[in-house]
Image (cartoon, rainbow, N blue to C red; front, side, top):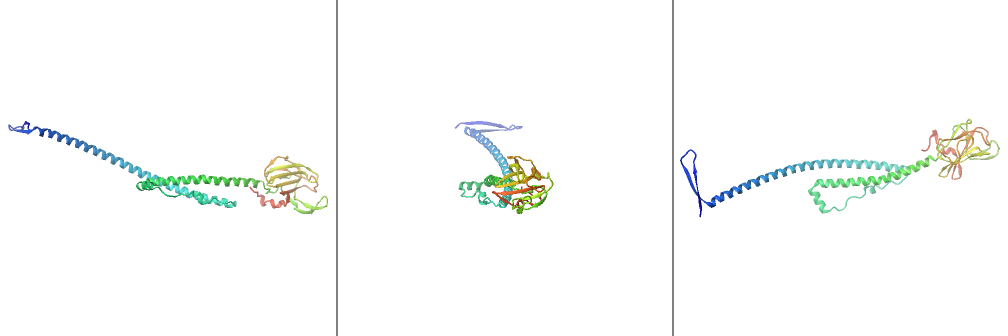
Length: 305
């Protein structure tokens, strides 16, 4: 066995210490030092990794807490939207009821939810409640989006119906065509000029000559001509089988084929044709049969709009 010898001198003393050690102890010393150095280095690296992990873990926890708060706020907002939509649906049902229409089925609006949940998804939700909340919010938002799309069609349908009805209402003669005194009613009477008893197919409204005469509803002028019995005469087709006629005008202000609107002046009161004084002879025809015009005149100058 080989040895190495070393002498240790003590400072400030004449004494010294001689050591004789085998070579393997010297090699063992350096090996131990190397192991300790590597161990300290690994310990330092581990401490750095633990610190970094805890730092990012803390950040992740904070971000998840912030995300949970945002998702809960979004959940409250979606619930509020859902409640507001339910209120709108109730208002929509009232509109349908007012017009005698069948409202949209409430069950169809819910668009069917639920069903079997994938076990793997259940496991993911169990380990991550935030992900479960996010999936629930996504499903709820999809439901609301589908409800909106579905009810856009419903509102469009009722809107088109109302527009059609509004157009029909504007074509119903619902106002008095002129101002004046009702001189002769609808029904059988003795004609003031000929003396014959016959059906009076309209009403006579008396007033001064040149009193304005208005269209009682929207329509197209069918005739504007002179008649031996009715003098200056106008007939307006309002659609839906309704027609109005005006006689004894002083002057016509419309032409055949012209479209007129309610309250538009179509002529002026006069005394033309077989007439005993200045007045308007006004008739209303429905599906080819005369009706009492008074039944189509709303009180207090109201009109169907």
